[in-house]
Amino acid sequence: MGLQRVGVLLIGCGLLLATLSAVTLGATAGSTDARCVDHDPVYSLSEIDLADLDVSYTNGCNTISVQPLVPAGGGLVVLGTLVGVIGVGRQRHRR
Image (tube, rainbow, N blue to C red):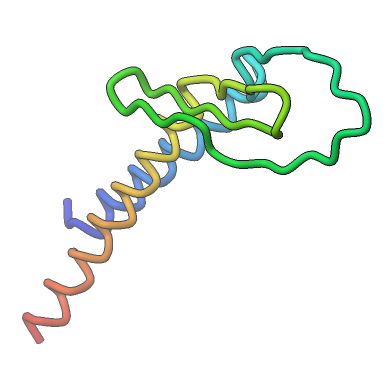
């Protein structure tokens, strides 16, 4: 199996994992529910922990944690893209 096919397989598995886990378990694992009066939300990443696949973001008042399988699926998509690009490069180099 060539690197291009492996890349496409990884991308497909990553999209499937991220989508199914977000639909079945929900996209967020939890959040704080502080009531903020007269607050204009400004979203930003607050924490990325690759060891636990923990991604959290904040709206300036509350912190929202993303379900760990969603970033894992995203990682598979990125890995599949890299493997596929390497496969394309190797194929062009052989010509």
